Image (cartoon, rainbow, N blue to C red; front, side, top):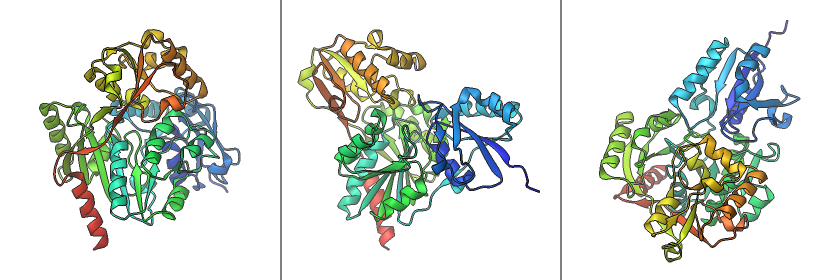
Length: 443
């Protein structure tokens, strides 16, 4: 007699949830994943995880529904296990969801690295952080240059951003801007991929990370994992570098899975030391050392540079910031706000002029200050961004998103870009840790 399958719901946001399903649940005949839930990212709910990715046990695929439906799902399908699989949330948020699952009669689970990480056939350096917006991307680009200069063939693997056709996005390879256009990448995807392409890196991403790793390691002798949110790596790292933010000293161990990531670190980078007070740098350094006393700690800077500071001096300026740093990352503003004020600009508050699609974001994230988040998860949101820029009575736009925003949407004002890179502040610093790691590989 066939035993009934254990009924499971996976709580996600279009990334970690799919990965954990692929690694833990897809081929398990004793489990039935009834649904994924979705939050954080607009437009994720209402889709299906397609059958060609879901495997032989799911010929119809798996529905993706809004997280608000959790209790109804549990009642309707007698759910026995609720699996949490997304990131960049306060610890209390996780336990509130656990309480909802327990009250509905289900167990609550958090799959860990041993069950979910892919083991690559080449060495892996992973870059993670305790919060979104700590500076992972510029750190990963810096490392890619160091590694190439050391003679390594490097493949960058990005944390997933599967916001479109999941079947087409199973395994993605980006080597030029034309590849981003062909994949119809969102602004959020472009913000992560485009700077790597400009730096000369090939980027792999998608949904099925076992296949992604197989493809990447065929082209490289070292993989660089560029993490997203504050998630732990999908690949088992041989060297794990974790960033903490000197501008957010109270958030070293406040979020999930950022605290877990910090405890895993081999090297802790205290980022943005050039922009924080001495007291804040010491506070975050001490807090990180208390959580992980065994990791090496290095301090680093994130210098901010305006392409043309004189263009904004004394002018009315609209600042457009990297979206996830403001939304998921919880920052009121970012590098663009700082650079514009330093250059003597007069900031114009865009909130009264925001189009409906952006107005909703300001309502959902009331901590955001007088800057415009570069949100573009859908064509409608991109159009709302264009309308908001056009409606704001500014002379100049300061664009602190990592992409060339003016090449993507029509902007009726001069655009001055803000750039920020990783910079060492100590010797031997991060470069010393990487050189020691490479020496060990050669020994």
